Each structure stands twice: as structure tokens, then as C-alpha cells.
Length: 162
Image (cartoon, rainbow, N blue to C red; front, side, top):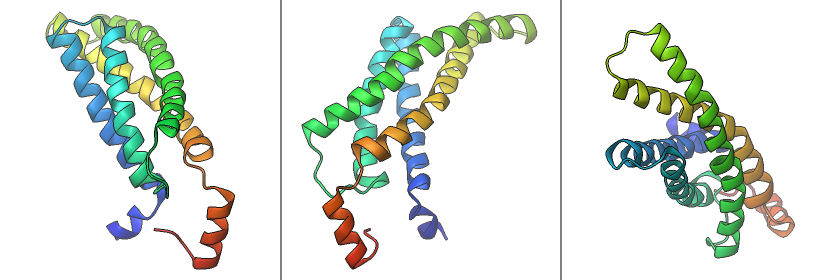
């Protein structure tokens, strides 16, 4: 049953996205709370590392692209993901973190300001990541990893490509 599920591109996309979210959140938290980076800088670094991880996972695992990874494709991937995530996530984090801070501070008994800060940052980051999912899938499947016409014709003759 798991093998059958794994054949669905969207299941593999969710796996890659979950892996990237863990990488992204982990690095962001370490940079902001352990090394005291500003949120915008910590987010830019964390997202850049996660984008690189995402490129290889999407290339090989999700879309099972038939060409080897290359710099031109990686640049397009980084650009599309960068616009979709680095810029929008930073903006969304800024907006939603203020809202979460206000809500947590006024409606939930506080353990400490540090716990509230971590919780609000992570809730804001997750909110921003959820918004980016649709953007990423759309552009990855239609721009970055789309099948070339000649490859599609081969697939039609020989059956599904795995």
C-alpha cells in the first residue's frame, strides 16, 4: 500500500515539503534563538539551505526528472522558490508574527517571553510555508520539471516512467 501511495507525485511532493519544512524551521530556530540573528536574516539563510535541499528532492524524488541536475535549472528553481518564499515568507512572517504575539500575550497564560517568541515565530513561519505550497507545486510542475515534448512521446510509446 505504501509503495502504491509513493507512486503519486503529490504524495512525494508532501514528503519533500515536510522534509524541507523540518530543515527550514530547525535552521531558523537555531539562528534566531541560539545565535541571535535578526529574523529576516535567519529566515533568508534557512530558506536558502532548504531551497537547495528542495531542489534535489524535487528533481530526483518528486518529479523523477530524467536529466541530471544542472546549474541553469537550479537557478530557475532558486529564483522561483526565492520569490515565492524568501520575499513572501519574510513579509507574511512579519505580519502574522505580530498577530500571534498579540494573541499569545493577551489570551494564553505565558510560560515566558522566550516561549511566546518561539511559538509566535514558528506559527508565523508555518503559516507562510502553507501559503507557498501551491505556488511551489504550480511552478515546479509547469516550469522547472515539466517534461519535454520528445520525452512525453517516448513515455506514450513505452508506458509510465518510473
